[in-house]
Length: 406
Length: 234
Image (cartoon, rainbow over the protein chains, first blue to last red):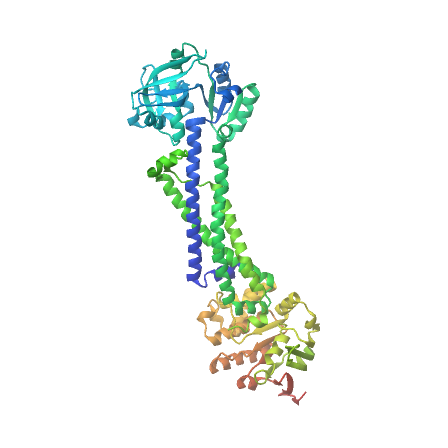
């Protein structure tokens, strides 16, 4: 009965209740949508980082990561790749040469990382080839020698276009300076401007031909079919590849890992602030309700309703009010997120700024289901906390005085 | 046998500054089945007396025994439970729960008592019929007249099967026809079901129906007239 009375009481002053519910609905849906945009941006950044830049797990010679010299390569890379491919849950693997060098055009020069790849292997692990617009060439299309795929940012910096010549200068395995001309075959544009500026891709065969010897494999990257299996695969490879450094994407890119945890906290801070602000409105409304119903509450206590029941009734009313607004707010935000997730939010106008931080200019808002569950609990908690003060006020009423209030 | 015994009851306001005696050494007893009116001018102590009898207010001195229990010694929580199980209230301004129907308003008290659904349904219907509102079972207070609301309030007061009903000026907000109708119902319930009613009132019609009239002045009983048994002045 208390449940029923409390629910009916919510609708006693429809206009007032609707105003509070609307405030909760708008506050929450706005908050959730903001959170979904942030989560979407970060999620895209992480996915783009994994798919274009780091993959799930990388294997290096530990010395290489300290000195970035090509002589610290991975011994027997083909055997290691074969071992990796046989590991359960591993989807694809690729071997890469990594050399630090310079890229020069007739206009400018820049320090770069030269990545020597086998395009067929590479395309199974990384999706960078999808970041090359049709108008910007392709990913090692054709069979011509000395093709290079570079980022848009570097192309702009060197003032070069498709089919332009780029001179790459780097040390060969013997320590001698080597240089060769490469023809721009494709210009990619990922979400990360910094990545686009410092990485160039060439076929490993071409690189070896230029240096006249095998440059070795400095990096093996692999992708796992199920994200949850990454730790398992990493542990298994660590056990089998003694002497090699086996790192997952979070270890390779701690910035990406940190942003994920920072955002997880930030999300709850944003929603917490919104709910905290809404709680004041709810407390105010419920106090008004208690003052308006002083005589009725006095009567209830006079006829034998215990204080704990009165307390519970006011608590329930507050929780109902909050929960109704909360549920509508969540439904509205879920709809908004779904619509914008399908169509995306185009922030191309800010692409330079976003790109500098590795964010895609087209954002697809996204919310994890667990957030909705946690949010429901947060809303109920807000309702309960907001109810304490009005409910305590109700408890302070003396029936003999309350029933005489006009 | 007396169901209520009041001994040397007093209530003093502003005890430390200028003491005002709302009740001053009142001795009174009520038997089962009485239909008693407490009358007196404003400020005579009628309402204070009813509040004391109902356990809503605590006396400054004296004792109130209800069916053998000294309610002046009960704690707040015990008093709430005592009221729920022993006393029915009818208020001047009806005080029904506006969001509940007539049936739910009556049922509510029984739910607080923990009466099962079957018994609740049966008793609610009986009570509403006994106050002549059998057809208004699902009507909310807002759609009932003042008289009808007060009849629901009487039915609610009876729902808990109390030892007695306290009615504080029950006809004050009613037109004469509704007041007459309400009094007839209460008189019938008193006569046929031996329910004890204690009123405070200014209304001469209520006084006329009462079988005992207790008059208070300045917190003291100045007359106590039982229509069947003659007059006694304390």
